[in-house]
Length: 259
Length: 275
Image 1 (cartoon, rainbow over the protein chains, first blue to last red):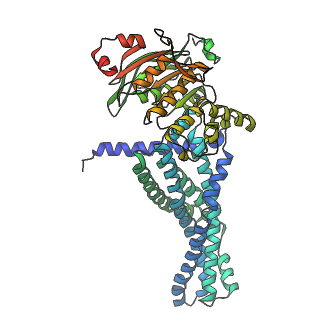
Image 2 (tube, rainbow over the protein chains, first blue to last red; image 1 turned 135 degrees about the vertical axis):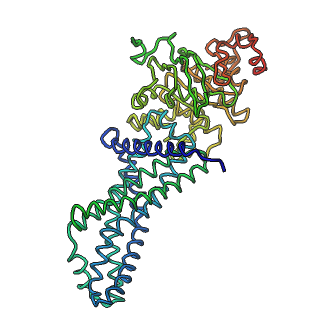
Image 3 (cartoon, each protein chain N blue to C red; image 1 turned 90 degrees about the vertical axis):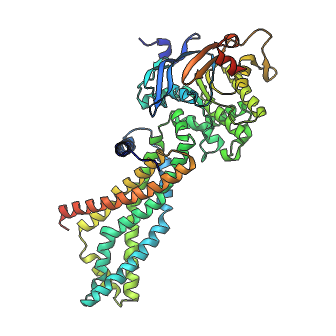
């Protein structure tokens, strides 16, 4: 294996961060410039949003159900299993709903973007688009960013709702909690800060998923092998960034709202 | 001071359409082009020869502003594109057609959508788009492939669709990157005939990169006969003066002139190359 010069390696990383920032900045700035590719945005929204619905619903349901099961065994020791709904709602709405939905979408959408754009890059289709006088960032990236941010917001809400529903099924059928007890405890302690935290995260995560997926697609080199490499890197980078940003957003929100 | 004729988008007959002045470009500390200078005049077709890796395709990408030179200036349609902002380049590129080596058709779009791409971007009416797409595809004799996807076409057909996409807006300059590369001799002849037809019917200036000598010489020795609807050899002793040759060697221009000058060249490398 050839020895990698550390200086060169660092320079490459810094350059990658610079290129990623430039690409993301331009993609967002294009929102305020014409032409706006509304049809492309809707196509992407259909693929990212509607297409991801089954997996998001399934994930939400199963995590909500598992959360209810796991928390109830601890709560049972203190004789407060009636608080199961509260714990499920807190966990789902503030944390697990948006994070898990984003990770699912990173696996589905970021990889899809990286492989699609990567294939276009290695077959010179992106250069062809530039040669035809069309800005590929405006035509290909901006619609994906808009669609991902908007759809992830709604997907997170759907995931939260199905998570609560999954918890409800377990609470009623296995834990002997009444319907009224469960739903009352889910919203009783919920405050604006909790919901806000759960809704602001998808915005950042959507930006991460789309810009990382598109960046790796646009920077693909080396034929079909390169496309495969970009796809894997996009998935890993998006997931890691989501987890890192989740910590900082949560810390910031606790600092602002105190919970 | 900019040339007023060029700035209004209507260059004059003898005008320089494309000019490279002392252009240099390197990748990873390796110089690909070294001090390349040449001019392409209106209506002229310049055939660029060179072995693989001599910098031919890079030269086309520079002419289109897809790459920027490290040194020197490139003037296209009277505008210096060196250091030009990408947004301005998009405007300029609308007057230039490009046929990529591997066609570079959008594989998720049909032939019709590929050819119509530029017109859709310019918000031309659907009726006019249909008419012009059919006309462009008829030019390359592929009007029956409107609904097909690129994957359903042969290599030669894809190349012809790429030509249709490049000529649909009747650009001032067309850049051909190895238009016959990887094709069988019969299909190659069909493609060269199309390039000759484009040159003689629309008087377009063109830069044609190829490593196939035969294609270049056919361009220089044949013209399109509208009555017969095919290319025919030009009369004995009279070369088609609108086709010139440029030879690159290790990123340097070692020949730039007419076919007759090329045939008379005493340079050992050139003699060996064209033999």
